[in-house]
Amino acid sequence: MKKALIVQGGWQGHEPKPVADILAGALREHGFEVEVADTLDAFKALATKKVDLVVPEWTMGRVAGEQLNPLLEAIRGGVGAAGVHGGMGDAFRDQCEYQFMVGGQWVAHPGGDGVTYQVHIEGVPSPITKGLKDFTVTSEQYYMHVDPGNTVLATTKFADVVMPVAWTRYYGKGRVFYCSLGHKADVARQPEVLTLVTRGMLWAAGSL
Image (cartoon, rainbow, N blue to C red; front, side, top):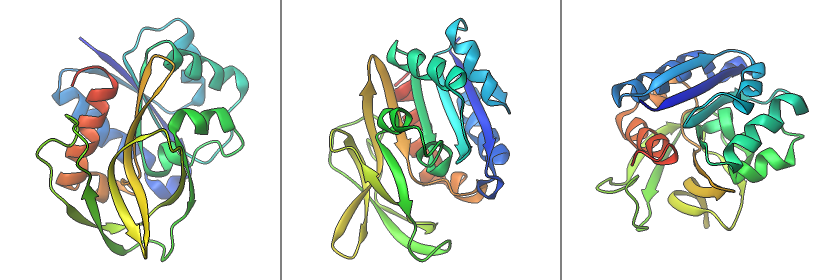
């Protein structure tokens, strides 16, 4: 049985506990043993604990070196990482190596919450997006700084700017998946979003 660690907390506006519970439920439906922790100290155990996937769900906040370093080392060593929205893409703003691992960092969400926009599934062959079609979401539309080395799976548009929404990458031996959707539980629960994110988590864990 594969094991996943979800670490939730930080800014409560993103409903970290409800979103973490949705992601945990999706993983359990695929046979994962899931631990949901509410402290960044849970990352310390990655120095010795065997897990297949880590899901950070912790917007903003500060992380100490003794918490962050075991996380990064575990991913470099082959543990998968996956996450959504600010829970992974706007965490620990002063930690550049964490942002490098993720492959991007939130910059702005013009228009705030409640923007209706289209998510375009790119034509990149991937088991994560196989068979998925473009869809519409009403939420925050993330404008991000993005690593050009990412494999972009889905995009949205700001005027003439094409902005990545979901991508994969490698950090050392670790598979990394990120999706900028998932502002709150209602968005994370939207079928198209949940399918995309669930597949991304499974891919990161080496199960897809």
